[in-house]
Length: 367
Image (cartoon, rainbow, N blue to C red; front, top):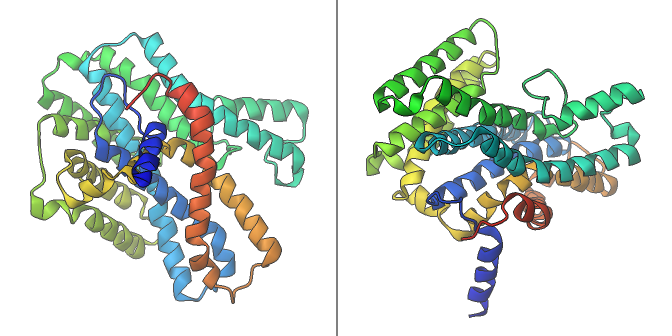
């Protein structure tokens, strides 16, 4: 009974609805998985100074960093599915829609940005802000406007570059839907239209890399069309989609060494969309795993987690380095501290979610 009471209290904190849209429970858990992938890349990157570069663990870290970085792409696919689906169902006033998107992004972002600014002042050697007042002010404003990412600007907050893509996508999609009147198109014609854009962007990147990350949003948009047509994966294929996708990405990274981006992007474009299609149906073993309460809690606070986990890890590794200076003979550090550091990032991010994100960005949402 006591355990059930705690679970209910956690449900009250971490389970939220999505306005009038039906909640896809496994999707929430999948977002938690995407957040964990991002944790993996940052944990592996910061722990590798304790690892011998010639060891097996060093190879493990290399590929974990590679796979972990694709968590961002999975987030983009999910965002493409949600935003395109919401806007395709019905017309919305652009001003109201933009306000809601800004409200969703900025409260937690500003809170963490303020923390970064304070730390930049307290630890100037770690600061990315130019010393010149004018240059520094312009740089901070650029970061506040979410320009790093789409533009060649280094963000104060390392993960914030993705928010530039998210906000651009948020503001662009309703314009495209309106200009081309896509809501009135037949589903097949919308799919062909989106596929043509994806092929064009992918082809262009053979000659000049230009925001290829936007392809993952289109993957999510096509995913929505497939989802609404009730397209399903057969039971004997659903459970292998994620490991096959990971396996193909690792193989491509190994084979192509440097020129792997386009190949891996193509694999993610289809692979992650199929993973989502399977998970969103809620029928496979993987979907049932992501439907678990703990995964849903993690997924619903994934934005707060995404923003704050990197700074938390930075602090933890600074403390660790003080007591245990990096040495190539301490490979065990990578394995021993993974779980405790992960749970500590959950703790700090939960505070941000409870204090800032939920009351200011998710106010009025209930289970």
